[in-house]
Image (cartoon, rainbow over all chains, first blue to last red; front, top):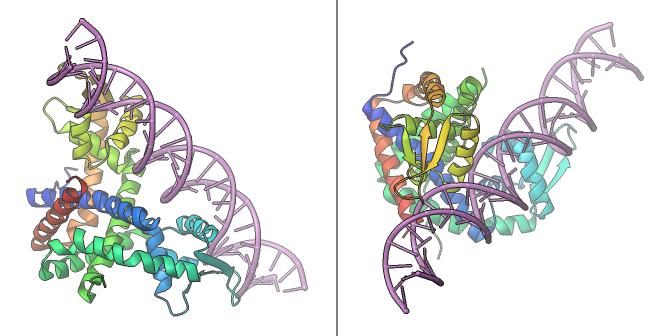
Length: 154
Length: 154
DNA sequence: GCCGAGGACTTGAAGCGTCAAGCATTGGGA
DNA sequence: TCCCAATGCTTGACGCTTCAAGTCCTCGGC
């Protein structure tokens, strides 16, 4: 018992981190929704597809890239498909997989959304940081992510 | 035009930050839900109340501390009130305000939840970081938070 | 060949958050 | 004194995420 409480420095960091985790996604969602009618998660899905050679990925892989559950992606893909931004079809090589492909209009939408989104990210995050802080942020993020993912599946 | 795209270092940092923003809250919610039947947001609300002298705060102030909208807090407070962890009453000094007070059982619940939650936070975040990185994280979080909040209300 | 196990995805229902109105109280001006 | 704007909070409807089954497909043992 008597758990190791957080010291002052850790508490300060923790408070800020929680603040960032709640406020930043909200700010990004808000910007993307206003200017492009997309969720931040939807943007990542389309963006991930747009960066692959043939604009196609398996659902499972896509879910991993977008940091979401397969169920979540499935619902979102359904909505995007209804809006004509995305198409799904079973993998010819193995019918258990589903391939998601970005459509032409999907590409246009994500291409139109990207500049504004990047501007927002730059304004909200990187403009306030020195290059050294950016590097260290990557390092810290990497360590935390590894830990969280290690915990999820052993 | 031609927006300033992110350089490699920034992209790396950004990818990690987004990963953390989606995976960490999920992990924390999961732990709190399993062990204490609380959302991370609910925990913060109860925790904030438990740290004030008389376990009482105005709704608006409480919402700010928990980094959530007033509407969100109102819904959550309704649920917590139904579960007997919280009580609300109009401020005698000014009827426009609502005072939220932690009940006895509310205090017990948050006290019982705290050790496991702190352990999880330590395990998921701070165990992987050096003290220098923790300090840096606080600094970076502070800057980002300031920026986001400055953007929200000018 | 068939049957069962297991993996990949989908679906439906329930819960939480957001948005836009709405209600209540106070304070100030006509 | 009465009204009206401003403030603080609440409510209801809608949309998204999660959780738990459920479906479909493939492969390996019999």
